[in-house]
Structure formats: structure tokens, C-alpha cells
Length: 135
Image (tube, rainbow, N blue to C red; front, side, top):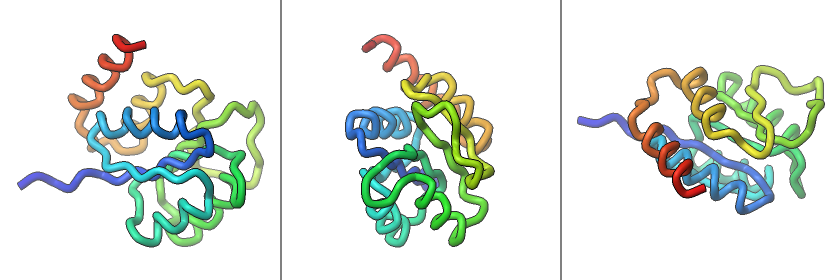
């Protein structure tokens, strides 16, 4: 019997960024939900709690800091990756990994290995090779 695929929630108001990250994570074996702001993300989280949050900071309706704060109240140990072009991050958010835009797929994969060490590596390696050859 195979174990269920981990669920990632990707939140970014830049749809191309969100869809690109979604494709990469799916190649790594995740089920992925995509939201364009924090309000949508909270709705997704209520219906299908994620094992991983990948979020931008600057979004309409509810920004990434507010989203992280709300999800941390519900799930204090939720692994979080903040993907942003910002150099300085707010002091009020803690216990997350930061990746700069544009995203380095190698860095994202390494961060996934750190946050979720049980994740199988083989599908991820295929996804990275496919992205590298299509770029």
C-alpha cells in the first residue's frame, strides 16, 4: 500500500509563479492547491489542511504575514516556505524558510528535503531535469 501524497498549499498573486511552483511540487510527488491570496488560502486549508505552505508576502485581501499568523494559530508546526523578492522580512514571523524570487529549483528542492526529509527524491530529480531542459 502506498502512502498518501503530501499536500502543499501554494499562495501567490502572481499566477505564473504559483503555477510554476505547483508544477515543480507535483513533480516532487505533492498534491497541490493554489490560492492567489491569504483569504483563499485559509478556505483551502479548512477544506484540506496542507502539509506544507509555500507563500508570497505581498498579496491582496490578506498578505503572507497575516496568513502565516492565522495558520500558525491552527497548526504551529506547519512547515512554511516564504518565496519573495523582498530583502528584509518582517520580524513578526518566525520558523520559516525563505527563498528569493526568481526561485532556484535546486534551493527549493534542498529546502523540501530539510522540511520533509521523508519525501522521495526520485520524482523531484526528474522534475528538476525536465525544468532545466525546458528552460
